[in-house]
Image (cartoon, rainbow, N blue to C red; front, side, top):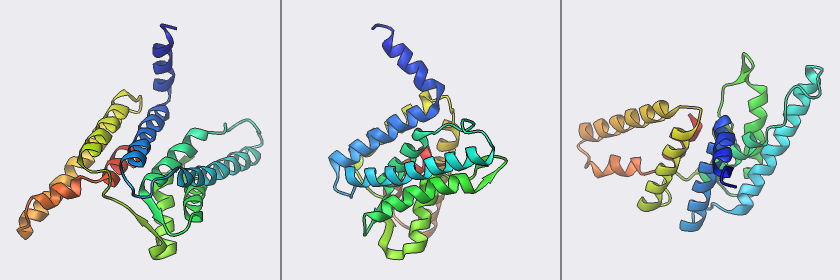
Length: 214
């Protein structure tokens, strides 16, 4: 039993998506328990169901196309990460939109590829497509959680990337620093109070995009 935490860490470190699932799951729980911005278990289930169906279809069709039924493994982690990202960011007028966002995001992961690799983040492109097609029936809720939960969210995201074998912390921090510089320079140029860019940086959507979607 003493070796269990070490073995669990080795298993998670072998695939960075384990850390993503852990961090996004923590952010979902944080938002679900501390705010009333539409983050619910039913919307997560709908997003996850849509993503899982698209993942199953994409894997099956890819295996059939390449003539090997076992060439591509069914990756549930990709579907879960996509569903968590969509649930945390997307707000919609009808429940089916969360399902559609999960399905479209994963489907485009299989359909739009260069050199065998997908070029869109599935969660991000699923949200964008819904907003483009449905207008005011689908939108993003950027500011949520409040200051204390947001600090905890950043801590979880930093820990996930620091511990992950993906080692993409430099990209996330580079984006955040560049984005912050643009906001503060713009505020200074317009003569706005600095509290405005500081508030813009205090966004749950910015956190999720910077650490999990770039």
